[in-house]
Image (cartoon, rainbow, N blue to C red; front, side, top):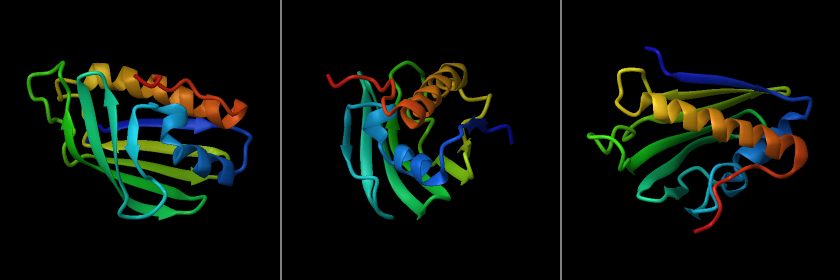
Length: 140
């Protein structure tokens, strides 16, 4: 499988990385409802006509965060729910985050747009970690 994969490297300690990942409104979108602090929590992120509902599957403090996409609607592709069932994994080792979006593969219609989106939002996550302010989508 060729899932979307990225690395974020920063001199900050793992605890700061973990805290930033769970601050979804700080780096991904302020158009977020729900919680990300406990296993089993559910949250929804919205980008105009596009939305994703996610469930927190695992939290290992300062080491790992795993989310499962339980429902999605991407208005810009034919198969609107391509992300359903995919898994988003952040693994933290020291000052490095290894990011995998399992199921986001090149054969998906949204791949190029979604790859660009993740590149942007992971840069925003790094900015949040290093400066305290990310570049999340603003509240609508």
